Amino acid sequence: MNKILYILMLLASLSACAKISKPINSSLVVLEKKFAVNVDEARQVLALADQKELIISDIRKRSVGQIVFPRAIKVGLFLGGNYSEGYIFKEDQVLGRIRMSGGNLGPQFGGQEYSQVMYIMTAAKLNELMNSTQLKLQGTVSYAKSGDSKTTLISTQNDLKEIHTLVFNQTGYLAGITLDGIVYSIIEKY
Image 1 (cartoon, rainbow, N blue to C red):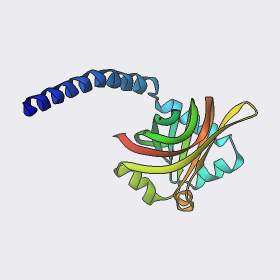
Image 2 (image 1 turned 60 degrees about the vertical axis):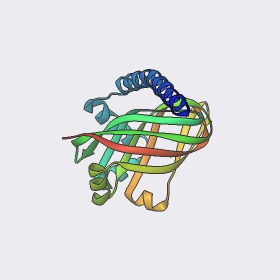
Image 3 (image 1 turned 120 degrees about the horizontal axis):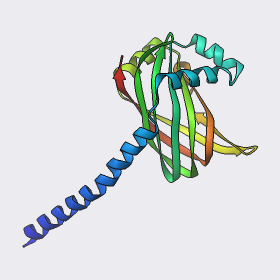
Image 4 (image 1 turned 90 degrees about the horizontal axis):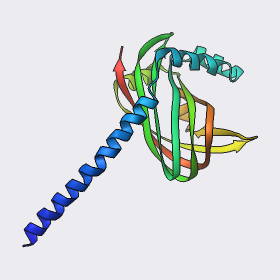
């Protein structure tokens, strides 16, 4: 009798998971379509990043490659998530497409879309990113200043030797302090 009850509970659980997975999978498809970008958009965002601060164009010149996410999203209410698709450049040539996805935990409220450019400073780090899925833990502080949403990434000093990250073009409103687990995975190599 216990085995039959266990089997029935297992079947009911699997059925519930199947019913839940369909809306989740369709939401992921909608998210992927909304944040699909093309190379021209990535090049425009990379050029716009150069205009943000004087030091950025110097960092770009010293970098061996750039990862550009023209449209990224972060949302949360204590628990949250991040998602974006972008391109990897080296010497103005496209090396491939990349996805950034992950979750975050911490006191936070709201959501925002933004652009992000990562300047890869070493050939070893670029090679590592191109040939494996990377998980990165980082801290994020989001706040409003003069009515504009601002985001600051908190990285270790070793990370700054390998990668400089610029977040800009924020829309929406997100406030909080979070610990983010971000996965960078190559979608396609060229």
